Image 1 (cartoon, helix red, strand yellow):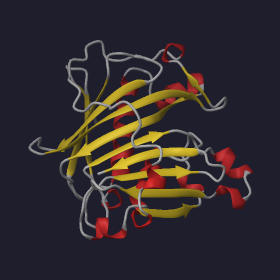
Image 2: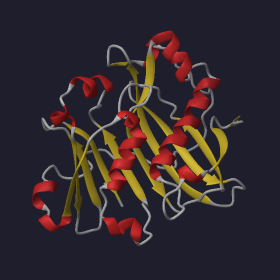
Image 3: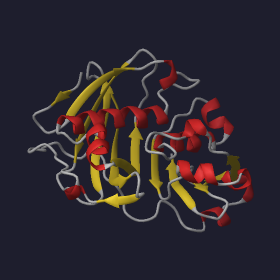
Amino acid sequence: MGMQNEDGSYSETRRLVAHDVDVNNKLKISAIFSNIQETANSQCACFGCGWNELMTNYRVCYVLSRMRFRMEQYPGAGDGLTITTWPDKNLKAVFTRYFCLDSEDGRLHYGSGVSQWVLFHVDKRTVVRPSECDIRFPEVISRQAPLTMPKGNLYPDDIFTTVSADRIHRAERMPAYSDFDYNRHVNNARYAEWAADILPVDFFAKNKQISLIDIKYKHEISYEWFLTRPETERAVTLECAETETGEYCIRAILKDGTECIQCIVQ
């Protein structure tokens, strides 16, 4: 059970299990995304605007447009993970939510994140303003932002043509049934898995860990698109460019050149 705190935040502790961690017994980035969103939905449900209420009353869901997460250390299977989340005070068409990850006893701080969301009509596939759905937040939000969202592009537009060929990794991914969620598009945590999978093989083999991930979600891959496209047009190309400073610039693009995500990994 979670707890609504006096500062406007909401906390929930989860016990990590085997599928939450990777080959090095470290919490996976995709599992971070999945778990924090469940906790965010729990807080929204406390105010009558969780996923079930929005879907039932308005046919609307929350859709992540950007996530930036910085990790300092990683828990493993069996560890208790306390997730604390709260919304920004300003409720706009694109609204902000923060996260902190700590050990169950509060002695260890694992990481923190900032995210941006929109409301999305699942039938019309259009963005909806919060005022149309009676979105409510805590009356008092006094907790400070643990991380800020930088403005501008994640990386230069020409990064994939200017980096030397030996620093570019490419792979094709065919979206499949298990990639799609109940919002009828490829789940945002799945894109985080795709980003991790396109990193050089020795990144995780040498027990490196992601210290920062920043993903912009630019174009959805809907289940209807998946069902109506011939197999030759379904493939998604993943590209990863390693910069001189050790950053990894990642994107996922469709056959027609449409960019689905931009991502930076450190």
